Length: 379
Image (cartoon, rainbow, N blue to C red; front, side):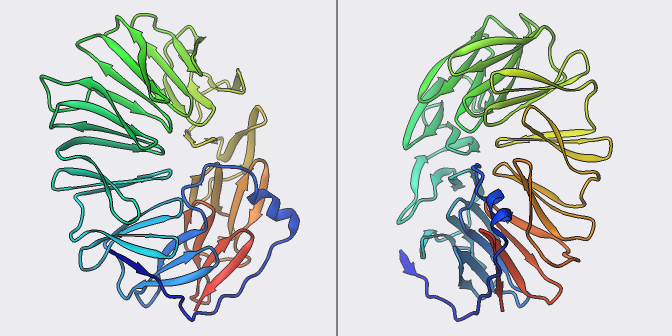
């Protein structure tokens, strides 16, 4: 069922930032939304901002919602599952899903044991009886209980990965944006999935630790007890010791080495960042973020750069960009060494990020959406 959304009569006022500040927004990044931001007004109405315009979706707040690039899937107050994309609304299910997940450009859900992808016009069924499900960007890893197989759905095709004759659960699995690793304990082999091909990553091992990212995999096994990197078909040994921890993203692998230092592989080489393990660290998309010595830092140009010399009360990493509240509670964004002022007013309580859009409520009580250097106000 398809319904076209009407334009609301709300006024939108746009304030443009200087050309210099707008450059930061144009830095390429992996975003989970493109000019789309759902929000609930103070009066309780459910509204969608879509590339400069506001659409009223419902008079009541949704029970649940997820966003993936330009798609919004939500559970209505009445329990229906709906998808909104390009100005049209589609009913996916008459009832609420059991599980609703989004990552990158993908939205998957289960209802009554059936796994489906939320797509315009009608959903696509992947499994009539599903077990475990993992959603990462362009990959959906799932266990099909009907034929006892583990499968990866990628670019419109489903690839069976392994048979599971004696169990109803998925083997140990790690999923990145376009890579996946499955460890078959019975076969003592870890298998790598990349661009539709399934091949052994490491064999003759009883234990393996993995960090899967975009076009790369960091791994360590109990046989070699070293840290290895697989990148575009080539395996390289990075460290002689098992790392204390590691995370992979788009083109980078960060890790706390077995010797207690902190390093990052990027651009074809290892960068020594700290002689100790930081207080906290995380890899999201193409960005490595570190909390160290009371400061918020990012990996940029081969070294750690200071974003702020304090740890913000709220900060979100998405699409290679950090959005955060500064000490005046103004909203700012940081990407590729550049800072962008999002709110021109202080005292913002909190904000939400949907890819390249930021939603917050101003001191005047108006909901405001920042997108492409402009601020749009919903009255």
